[in-house]
Image (cartoon, rainbow over all chains, first blue to last red; front, top):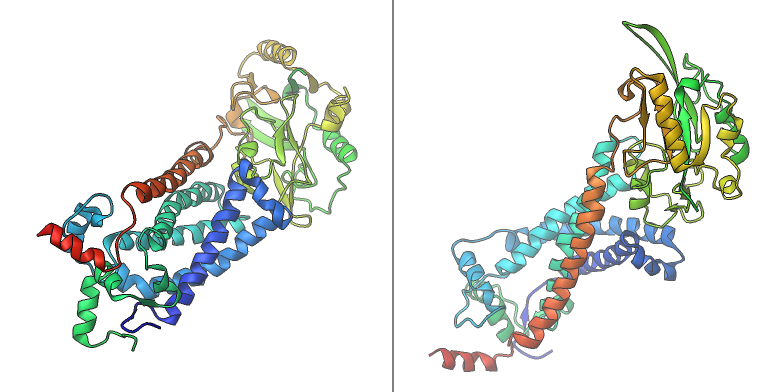
Length: 212
Length: 264
């Protein structure tokens, strides 16, 4: 490894991230295959919609602990908005949409990522509860079960855009980001741009891990 | 093919349950052991292996005592909530306006069980499938009446073209007078089983007064589904546009100095 790389994530974070990412991806593709008749063909490779339903349900069982750990790991760094600096960042959209001379400095995660955290945490829990009811609905009040389906669809409506923007900005949109969640190491210029305040605080506290 | 209607004139029903039995015979649905619950109504509700039942109901009011019999089965809605929610296409409309069920396509998701305003589809745990009356598609497609209609000894059940049956229904309701009404043609864009009810609809057990596709189904299928496609397409297109117009963020470090110089 090159010298001077900065450690941005630990092994446990990366495992949880990828358990969640992969289960979430399978859930979205299989869910799409059941939600739209025009996407029914997605069930062909696995041998039919019934199998697709099973894949969807059991991927959900992987998603549940992944989400629980994700919330535990990231709520402190990505779950708490800090005012007024986060508001200032939001006012200029973090410099992502138009040219901004000086983007307000953020900690480890910027307000956009914090919004992503809350969307996934909040609607992830909605998806889990509604999904479990849909899986085992017999004996429950009809009116209750009926509303689980639109809530589940609403979850997709909210999570997918956040997921895709996360995917875009985590790869080609912000070059150098993927390694943060693949190897855990990022370059110093990347960290200076993406999490300047975190970098300073870690350095001051002497906790920053730098490759030698 | 013209739309068909099964007309169910409750003023003529004697509660003989010939329809219930004929359905079992034609559709090969052997009975399962049940228990006596103190009523002729047996089994107590529609089941995966019982696609129509006679509901027995005793009522007493100012006018005296009445014993009501109601032939209960799938209403075959035009705007059918079950067809709307079925993810696999197992439930579908036929050329007769009835709602058919293709068991081989059913994945046992139970979405129709909760969508139906009449609570007709029933889930069978043994086969992991949902079952319901299909108005004897195998018979009506061969120019025969449904088995229940064929068996009915009093003509309480009749089967025919939609227009003709509705004419008969309204004439009969008028003839009966009083609280008598026609039930079915004005809901969910018209059902393909239509009742002539001698009493007010609200009196009958398990018969919704104003059945409609549940709001949750409308919210889910008519609003959230297209919205989610729009949102998903929007961010994919938006991200691409962002990349080719705004471009990726410069995190290399060299650009940093350039931008600083530019700013100063």
